[in-house]
Image 1 (tube, rainbow, N blue to C red):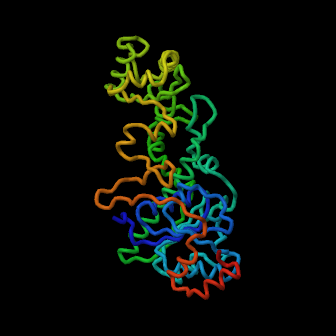
Image 2 (cartoon, rainbow, N blue to C red):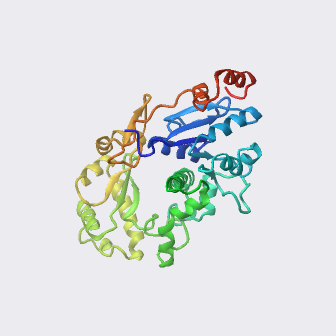
Length: 375
């Protein structure tokens, strides 16, 4: 099986963060992704660079630009993550490449988008989710907003949103439509991820402020607690039946402090008591007590522990790639399962083979190497 995207060729202009993540998702599901790397390689997260071929092209040389343009002419899609205008200045903008290849899907990944007053400003995940209104609601009740690593902006609202956009546009081409440009901004994608938050806000259920809502830390029955050994336990017993089971394990059935689950006036006292109670035993002791009980309680695992957890082992959630533990391709397909990921190779290892694949003769490849246009 070649995967659901088998037969598609994607050219990825190497970058960091969301662009490579988009390339990983497409490659994981069978697309042929060829990464155009810089000389020297730069930073590459090996898991996100898996299952690709790598070619080194100097995009500051006209011959290098010509080689990249020829490669894009053979592709179904490209992914680039430069600031707006950079690809145009290189001579590889959408007007040029879509003229060469009208069926091309041109994926653009930025923080702020291709236009708008902040389009040319630098930024990182934390800035994008701040402007999108997402960061403000994350953190302890009444405390300072807490950035959730770079999961939301870079990967959820960025790379994953671009991968979705690429597949949508590729389907349109297969239905007879023309190629087009995908403007994927991490601000836009992060805002879209918060769609439920906006619905709750419209209903008066999401006030401003970190940790001020049911799902962001205010409710003592939807929170993380520290245990005696320094480990943590996640509690998410929102529904009445799960809340009742939760109280049963803790011996708190009938306790007046816990009688009115959804009354916010009682949440501070409930939180204080649960904090003290969970601090009396180790994380694994609590996990064992809740095992098999439908109370929506689970231990907070480290990455190493997650890879060894029986449920994740049973599902194959993690795989070994080149001797390293990495997340497996997701989601799962019943008829076109993803092929096993391949470890990242040496940067530039496929330069000659890729150029030969698109019809450049060996003597011309040698000339390009000699000039430094490719490496």
